[in-house]
Length: 199
Length: 199
Image 1 (tube, chains in turn purple, yellow):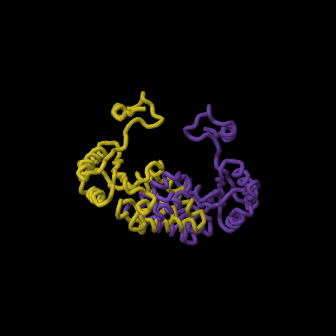
Image 2 (cartoon, helix red, strand yellow):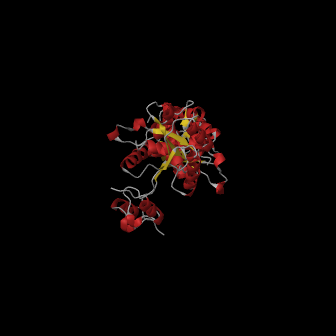
Image 3 (cartoon, chains in turn brown, green):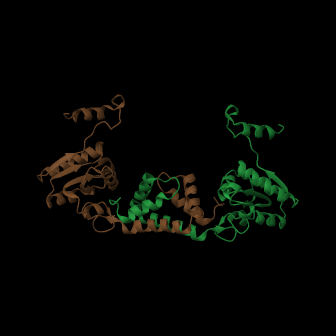
């Protein structure tokens, strides 16, 4: 593509590395950046650099943090007696948006998946057990995804945690709100039946 | 959003300024950047900075350039006797992709639009006339968009150019390839009929 000047074609190339950004979108974004005020481009470039250099893992829960602890672990209003175990830091933000959980988190950074060669030793499971042993935790809510790897991981962790004499729970599986019984798959529907509760 | 650490929420905010990037996509891109190799983030940041600082307008055609002249004006294989006039630098890349034009370009950077307060003096029209006068141009192809402002601008420029004794042409308007006569609007269909040619 020799008709682009070099800094432009380089910017388009770099933008195309981002997920879901194809050549057309990359070109549109590049033109937007070039045509916009210089300050905006500089701000974006600095935000990317800073995010890469300043963000590390929270020493307690392995969420993203800019200090030793993440904003959630630092927040004194959170209830330290509940720990929600998630696969990925992104899941924290999904759960936070519900405003339905006020405890702390623990990010595993993956799930046990023998087929991909990921065993328990590759995840932050030992750190979770140590953490639970050393603090007055009442309940650990396991919120790994409701798929094969997520369930396996939840089972594995719950066995280890029960030895620590702590209550372990699993998030409910069932029909999504607004869903339709007619179109639900059998596994989800069986789960919804198993998980029925009195009203 | 206090549960994001500051560099992360800042990156998400900056990414959201980009066109077509909403909160969800911005979050997805930010996580991708943070989780990817440090070198990739740094490359993207540098590409943005460089694009903003190094890219200026070509002195001859007002396309984006990193030197005084853009890669197209610098290319000795291009035919300087044809100039294609476009509204926007983006249009150049659309035309280049056809591999159907080997002349040079001239970017107006807009169209005459009295309702938006944009007159001929805000566009690179004087520069076009000067350029045509001073060089052995045989034909100027006006490739502004086929809408009211584009047509007005094309008419205005063609009047001025005719005084320079140069051939002026306008890109054809008609049915798009793969289009359907049944569903074509009246104006496009009238244009297609007016522009008919012997076979």
